[in-house]
Amino acid sequence: MKILLISSEAAPFAKTGGLGDVAGALPAALAARRAGVRVMLPLYDSVAAEYRSRMKFIGAQYIPLGWRNVYCGLFELKMNGVVWYFIDNEYYFRRGELYGHFDDGERYAFFSRAAAELALSLPDWRPDVIHCHDWQTALVPVYLRVLMAGRADDIRCVFTIHNIEYQGRYSRDLLGDVFGLPEPVFNGGTMEFNGGLNLMKAAVEMSDAVTTVSPTYREELQYPFYAHGLEGVIAAAGHKMHGILNGIDTAVYDPASDPNLFDPYDDGSFEKKVANKTKLRKMLGLAPRKNTPLIGMVTRLASHKGLDLVAASLDRIMDLDVQVVVVGRGDWHFEQLFRNARETYKGRFSAQIMHNPGLAMKLYAGADIFLMPSLAEPCGLSQMIAMRYGTVPVTRETGGLKDTVTPYIAETGQGRGFTFANYNADDMMYVLRQAVDLYRGSPAAWRALAEADMRIDFSWTQSAGQYLSLYRQVTGKK
Ligand code: GLC
Image (cartoon, rainbow, N blue to C red; front, side, top):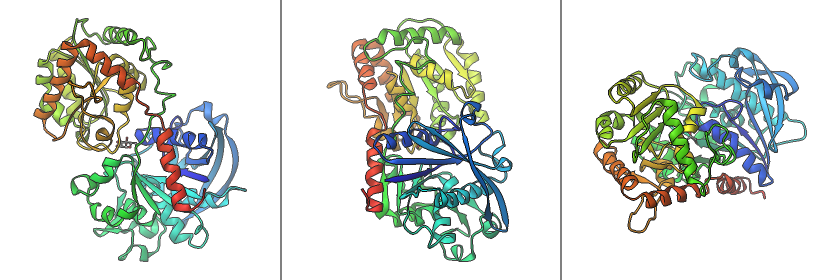
């Protein structure tokens, strides 16, 4: 099986969020199962010199995009059993930040068109499956089926929805000029949605299979609340929709070898986790206190991550006599709220308003409870990382959170964390209090729960197997 994965980001080369983690780890997991895997991503200026210096220049060509012919260089890097291709165009990808530019539509149209063209012209390697991710690469199946019809009919397309909130919606005026597509794909066609263009809709319709990053998210997308307008499109695609849970890179996220930690540990040396907590408190200026659980949050500070619930109940959380550390950036009013809390609750609240992966890992290790009350969470990786680091999750039952965090039952000791169903601050407080009570009242049970969480297999092995069987299903090949 030959698989070409096309993504706008992939760790460790370029990453803004979970998509980067997935596109970074899934290829190696597939390769470990003897699939031939290659990946294409943009050559951003932020790709580190240590990788650039190992890249080989393959060639350059001009890619047609509407009325333009656009330069496209191609570099190659072999790593972890995977061939990584980098598509070079400095005008589009030398921008500092990956996303948020006025011409993102054009940038990823170029990337998608270039990737589609290159996929068909690689010397002695032709993919059986092209696997695309989110709106940035949603045009790949469209280009293959519309502009390159007849040239790629033997190749199957799989499209993964990591987050349906970002669909790539544009004015219809961009159809020919920017995306280089003919009028029929708009009028009554696959690109049209509510009078404008919708890239994700087109990808869902034109792909042979569509996956979501958790089984529960696949179910949730039937409802307007989660599908952001695309519920009808998803319903029509029901026969080819699959929910496959993400894994995490267990070699990277490993408390026994993570270089960010003060003291490495595993499920047999839990006291060292406590040492991480002590040192983290010291580093952040939190008071040393006995029997006081540390609640951690590593998150984008945005409403859909459940921050409204936290804002509504911040004082009640602090009334539980806990300490809290928040690491993340985001909406100004949440940043302000946490900066203020740092003043109000001196020595008990630490607001680290920054994107800081090293500090985030110290918090995964040093916290006792990981709070993640998302409004929607297609999969969520943080809760899995937290559990692997022996930090017990408190989560809302949505998307991948529901699939990975089963509710703790005191009588039997079963379950992995503390969960609530309705998006409601009282319900969140109820289970958060249960978690704090267990921590204080039953240290042995707490430790057993945390250690059991550390032993859960969150590796990519199982998910990679599921993707492989899906590729086999759509290609009819072994
Ligand atoms: C998106 C989703 C997140 C998921 C990630 C990786 O960022 O919001 O829930 O874990 O993609 O699939």
